[in-house]
Amino acid sequence: MESALCRGRAARWSSTAICAAALALGTTACGSHHVDQLSGGKSSDAQKVAHASASPTDTDSPAVAKAKVAALAAYRDYWTTRNAAMASGNPNDTAPDKYTIDKAIGELYGTLVQMKHMGMVSRGGPVLNPTATSVALNSPPSKPSMVSIHDCLDFRNYKVISSASGKQVKPKKQILRYQADATVRTVGSDWRVSTMTFHQDQPC
Image 1 (cartoon, one colour):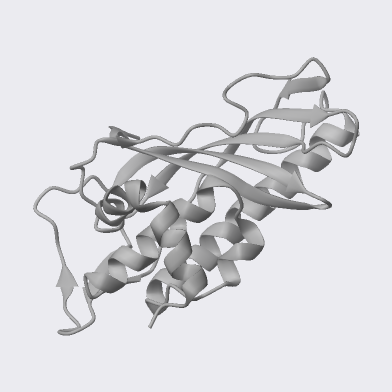
Image 2 (cartoon, rainbow, N blue to C red):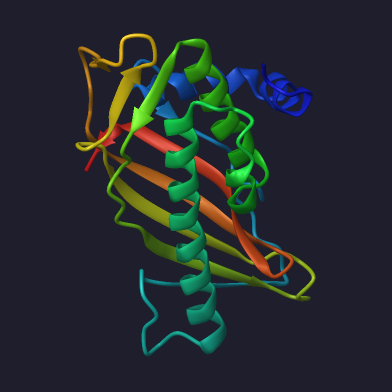
């Protein structure tokens, strides 16, 4: 039985749950699954933005290079805990909380709840190829810094399994490689995934 906390999360984010379950099954019925950016796409006057590649470069300031490394590490940790939670089929799994915040929590828990209700679990996970496309260092330091990440998710080794039969569920239409975008921001001294946007109609 789901906890009250999990039910509350699911209720708050019910508008995304069905599309999230479709994503988990590798279908494209929902098209692009868009999530609004935390900042509404606007940068404050105090925000300093620097474009960045996947790895620190000679042109990066030490602060930008440090932010990229930390954000990309948090993004990969997010996927590790996400894959584990979806394999367990347990919406009460709180491990992903360490790497998620804001709307990313709703997307993830909506997926977990729907997959449990559908009697599905997953095996494996996508191969990641993330690139940090921009870094926003906020001043004063008490405000969150943000890193935008673009990825090409490769689901060729990802499987959805029926809990009842133990057999793989294979949708008729399935795109195995498509684009995704994430926003990762600071929470105190930690970095967490704030938004996760899946572009199921954009192969890569």
